[in-house]
Image (cartoon, rainbow, N blue to C red; front, side, top):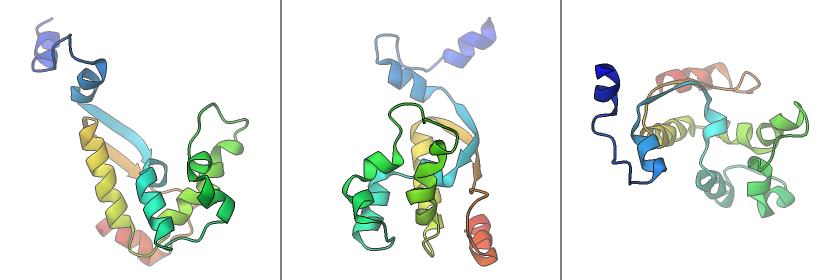
Length: 136
């Protein structure tokens, strides 16, 4: 019991929103794919800057192509955001350090204190780009 008391010491009071309590609890992320954690705002900015070329129908409704609002219809369908958009973002030359920094900021905001980050095994990154990803 003393361990539980010390674990919850310093957390927001019970009257505060549940979200604040959950953010304050230290967490670990044991399997996060960089391409699956991209900020929608970053994707929109890169598309607007012309850093990635996407079909016009995707650009017009980007949220629809990268966000699930209900379970995917099939295993194959669950990979469509990566095929259509997300992996194309991580392949932009020199972008990986920015994406890793943004992900670290987002994880820190959510109380993640340890993360194991992955790059999709289906990536088309070159050996040099993979080296940049690791040493970044």
